[in-house]
Image (tube, rainbow, N blue to C red; front, side):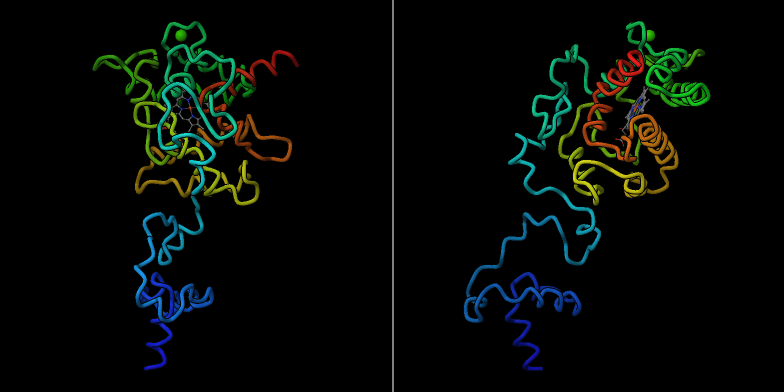
Length: 273
Ligand code: HEM
Ligand SMILES: [Ca+2]
């Protein structure tokens, strides 16, 4: 007993605080960082910056990038106009955001005549333009407009033609997503980065299909069936049109989906081939 007490008291401060014996054991493997005498006198270690809790193994499995601030200025600041990341600190170069939020830019690709409203036939044309087949474009257009029409209407009345109003597209946000768009449609670089730090286990800047599925499951909010379906639809459609030849969804592809520049690129590629 006395011996046990001695061992525990010689552990680093954060280990000795653990009530669970097997966690103490794993901490003991790392070994005490301070000498016996100083472990009693030094102040407790600062735990305030930890991103992993020893008793919440999920926090070790799905990691955050603690150095993001050294790679991108103010990663916590959601950007209204540009989808920024460490390799694109200014967002998509040479592209005018036209005063639209990043979420509005994502949707605006489908507003084929630029009147601020997306009708189902425009969604259909947009889906065809990025390479979706006839059946997927037809069903996709109906589902997207069915889902987003009512929440984005300017008044109480529903639209008989299922129009989507880009002014109000932020009201179309659902749950169980990556939270990269904030509630107002800005782009949150820290949430975008977390997609890869948490789920990009085999490649730091890309997701395999399995990792994408893990992300969809990991992002689920409880009982949010609508959000689960919507998120699965968005991500699986993205995977099907934009995966690379090795079946990976690259970080840059995903960044381009967020600000809509990917859609323009896919359209141009399709035109030129
Ligand atoms: C008319 C066409 C479209 C509209 C109006 C639209 C609208 C939206 C909205 C409102 C969100 C925000 C969801 C949220 O954060 O809760 C979103 C996210 C997203 N959309 Fe779209 N979208 C359209 C087409 C597409 C297409 C064709 C794709 C894929 C090829 C796609 C892929 C995504 C992805 C991957 C997200 C991110 C979801 C997440 O953060 O987990 N969208 N879209
Ligand atoms: Ca339009």
